[in-house]
Length: 247
Image (cartoon, rainbow, N blue to C red; front, side, top):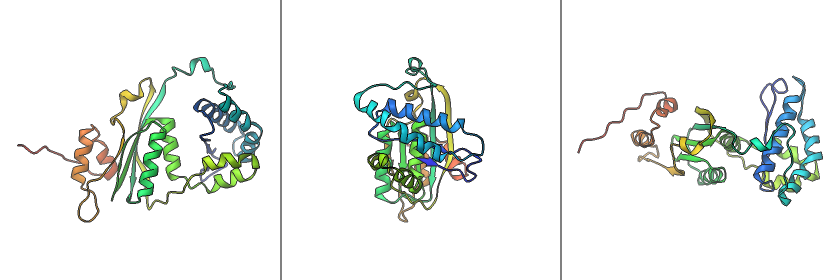
């Protein structure tokens, strides 16, 4: 995926490659190399052509290594220290005007399962998506949910080398009426990602009323049950008050 900022090339692009043809190790190493190349470019200089050229010269090496189970040494990484390396835990609170499409909901659910993400999707109006896991995995999910893929399709069509790879990487555009991150929580130097999760899995929830709108009181109750009631104000701009009814 290539995400170009509005002031590119003054600001560097975000680049991430993902495919089922890579094992996780090779995918990680490949993306580290791409990140190194981007950071090494002169400020204000376009770098897309450089990235394409580098991928044309090197992508087959990573594909072959994945197929054979070999390991490519990363220029700036000490693999012996990578196994126990602390990661950044993150929790994204994403607001959408509505989430009705069963196809979007299915794709989001599948995406979270593929990337060890927990949380929930509130279907209906408004729509809320909460994803939690490593920052790398959450970043990838967010980009895949919002990225249209038009530029990436052109990117891979520049060379026959990428034709089969593109079939795995092609992203179905998810057209959202409105979607944005309202709150991003992060925990640096995390050695136990699972210990910071508020949710045990990823599930779809809904609290519909007769007008297809969600019941905000029921949503607040759900958030409170998962010790996440603080997110209600960030999502909707108002304090949520939930009190248990006495028997």
